[in-house]
Length: 420
Image 1 (cartoon, one colour):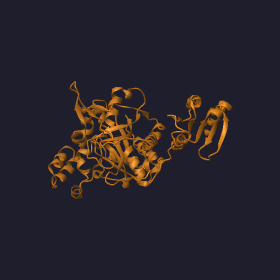
Image 2: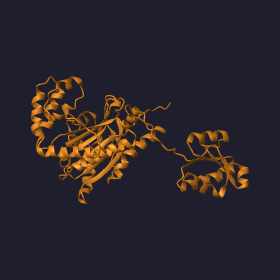
Image 3: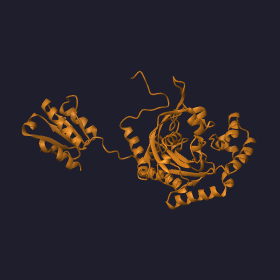
Image 4: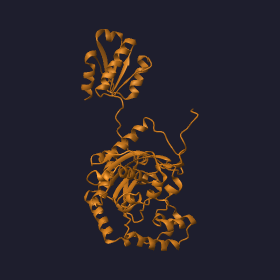
């Protein structure tokens, strides 16, 4: 037992489970790569002010959950709690919006950190894949991102997820709704912290998961009734494009998401097999965030999908991903000369792109074959002194059990041909 353990609320990714996480990341990223999104990677920590401005000081993420610290030089930094603010900051700093046709389409993958009460599906360190389309106001972009996420989930074999959709309006119609909602909420029996939230960001109260709060929200003003004609037409186009693409969604007028920067389109992917932590991903449009960060007006939309939550959803549905074996060929030398010769064969196979491993540590034949079998290799190459004297190696098919003597000079080409 090690003296040290992973911090509370975190986890280690180890084989063989780590292969599933990698497969999920790749499956989510694949539709993005095929749709013009380029990869971006940002630092694991940023200025505290970036998240205070972008995510919102009234959010739980900034006020309660952010890992913030002061450097030796006096800078106030925070481990990134989400990806959008960092990606937009990077795009603005590099002037990507000035270098070509908008939108700038970016995708990313990485770890994020929030100080939350650890529970199944909610960790203090978690992994996400995200996508952002920066600099264009177009309902087709909103629909595109939802469709790509739906495509990624379905490619993994998920079927029991739902897409919730709503519009939060814009700077024209949301203030009118905000005032009406505040008037309704002030009359409720709520705790002091929630009352403070009413004055800062009343829409967040609608996102409160406590049953005693939700019961009092019955009859609350609906944002849908306050949408201006432009927002209503925009939302109708998003809905129409999704329907035309065969993507099923549910209208949810209480969906507001947990970040302050969202405007108009907001959406969430939920899986009912995960219990209370049912959200596996979500996102929306954030047309004013660039200006909040000191940049020009760059209407944008994006999402982030949780890798951890997606893996839990797969398990809830009993979906087993087909993970290819990490090793195709395993070499077993018997004796020092065979060890030298087969190590050379292994090196040449790897140069040919064949995933190959080697029996290290001078194991005997029985022990080495057990390791070869556990590796999942399709073929095993065995050679001893007699084989080398005859200029051959033994090539064993681990599925059929068939074994043949192959000329040493031909083994690399033979193995490559069989695997292709």
